[in-house]
Amino acid sequence: MILGVGVDLVDLARFERAASRTPRLLDRLFAESEQWADGRRRSLPSLAARFAAKEALIKAVGDSTGMRWHDMRVVSNELRNPSFELHGGIAEIAERRGIATFHLSMSHDGGLAIAYVVAEGRA
Image (cartoon, rainbow, N blue to C red; front, top):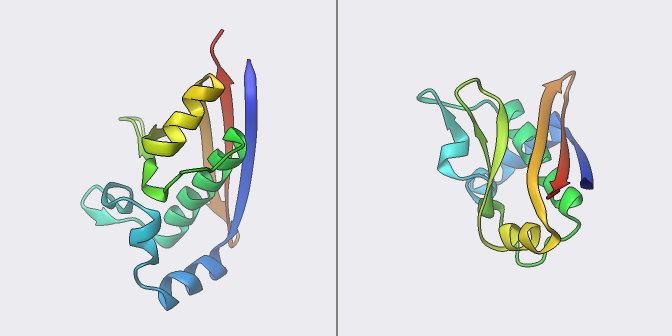
């Protein structure tokens, strides 16, 4: 059963300006493991898509009380399919709401990054 849906859209130019104006911003938003892949730093468009994913997750869950950015990490499996690793406040909220699975899709192109999240409950 679907318990929530979230979507978020990020303007890449605005995200890049914010990252350049505030050098510690990326460290506040992303765990070290999210900022690197295959021994290289992820591109800003890729990070913007991950930020959109985190915002879409909050919308799908419907609450951000006690949540921290590092409590929700975007991870990829061996096929590079994205998913979430949840900790702390956001994991507690998901548990209380009976959410068993999150489905995540992200993309970036044409100056925008987008993410969709579907929160699925237990049967």
